[in-house]
Image (tube, rainbow over all chains, first blue to last red):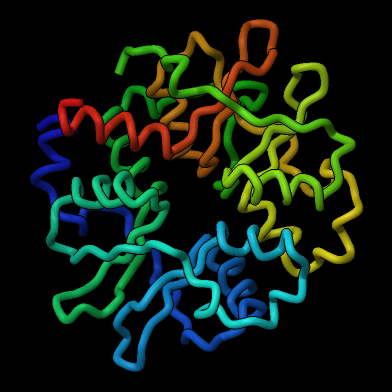
Length: 156
Length: 131
């Protein structure tokens, strides 16, 4: 089927789901950063005692805070959570992720199980990979710009 | 996907000179609410400074690095595409290499714009909704 049909019919579980990097709301930003770096993820998921998501803290919040100075690293992620966040369940259509990201201006969407517990994270990167899978000829790019071959993934 | 990257989806772009300090670059990202700036001299691409560079290289050493030139922490020689490349090529650079922002240059390697996942998402969503 075509991309647009698949967006409507295929479940979120077809996307590349990243690890759910969860933290308590009272965790310091300075604690979250090494974990985000280690997992190469631009987002941590704030969860309650039952593991249900209550928000996110992303690179975007980090930049806004750092612009005011490094003292922010001692403050809690819960205090500086993202203004908007969203979750989808694994069996909802991929198109819902696209719709949420567009309407709420999000880079990440939390993936939850049937009980509402955070089980993963997807977003722009997962969707790019999904879309690229629909254009295999384009993926066979041998030469891009000055770099003849891409050796490893980078998050920039 | 044979359509070339339309101008509306690769511009505008924010570029800063290589002498810009880390603090100034960070304030640019925060002030403009953007995820990436290009580092350029006279219209030629030198590097790229993104949210991921902040997380990986700057966040834990901000006080030490804030007065350093951006060239010390930027991603040098980023992967880019030419304006004549198919849109799918930029998309696949994002998917395969993991670079979320892909500069677009002309045949003389002068910066024309940037393709970001956000712009691709908006394009796709508009097509899904028949906008």
